[in-house]
Image (cartoon, rainbow, N blue to C red; front, side, top):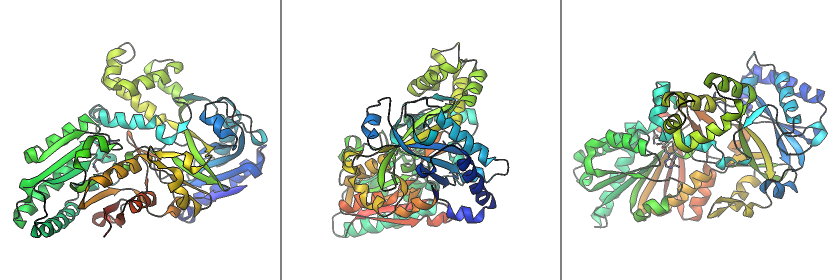
Length: 510
Ligand SMILES: C[S@@+](CC[C@H](N)C(=O)[O-])C[C@H]1O[C@@H](n2cnc3c(N)ncnc32)[C@H](O)[C@@H]1O
């Protein structure tokens, strides 16, 4: 049996975490299971709200099962198991670690989903659950539909919670509103523009685009600072400035437009999908002096891949509600348990307002539909399993990038599991061509910066209020950029150095 602890610092610091290892091993040894086929992986899941149980079992499908799994065939054989533990919750005095492990192992005996009979008595199925979707790669999970719904119906959610989304970000405020950080970016732009102007090479139109604008706080801070600094600088750049705000939520864009209304026609709002930019903002190719993004990449869909004992696997997920939570929701809303999955699907399709309008006998008003949404979201968990990848080149990260690009990152780290950051990679690859040869991209977000980071930390997914947070695989973005002739730099976010947020800066290589 292997035990992989991906939280070494936490283990050192927490006596509770240290004490959790022994009962975990004892519970495993008591169970009728072939321990040679079991790995235990201990993470410290820092997100209080997340998609995991304290202990869960993840089947590792056999190589010959890949095809079956991809075609959804009923029987896929299992060649091993991973017991995944959240050390943070195990370290709490009230957690009975052995009982959690035993419950996870016995849940795995109840085969309900066709992953087949497995190793030493474990089936790899699940106990009492209400499934919300079939097995899918992480990026295709319904949690991303929940995420999109959150931004589309933000006003209704915030009305129900009584707090604005920014309050659930670490620090209670977005770093995007940091005026000092904005000033630094603007002054850099001015020196670039001064230089181009002195060579008569500065275009008349000066384009800046921001992706994922939220409440418009970032745009407002940036534009206010810009107008003020330009006034002092005296080169009349503000007159030539076009600030484009792009977001997939029309509601969010309306809010952002109101926030920057005093900047008049210097600003335009565009509804766009950040992961597919070439269609919507292709007209900017080679013209953007600044692409500005904050806290968006960590909010885009991602798969995860893992290397286990030298083989590469794709992590498949399947969202569910634990049976007890489903019963509570059913009782609270006067529903049958069997209706929950269907109503959730409908909610994701039409949103809380139309859900209430179309089913007044179940939801008296939008507020009640939002309460249903919140209850389902809070209870939502994800089962996981590992499906062998037949070859990295057969796995498409985006329509244009194959999994081959992951090879150097995976090869260096032994047993490792990492994000593929499909959405961020797609968006990033589509952004690079927009940059003017002297332009730059500045992105404040949660990045891993070395492949080895994944061996000693948990990087999502977690839940921020109604949205999903996943750290972004920085070395992967670096690889894509360097192949296309761009330099990528990561730096700590100077203005709040204690935060996990890093600044990624991208420029054409000199
Ligand atoms: C966490 S907020 C960040 C807002 C702001 N940039 C800040 O830092 O405070 C994420 C923003 O990204 C937008 N967003 C998320 N996924 C998107 C996608 N696939 N396409 C376009 N916008 C997206 C959301 O609507 C939301 O406005």
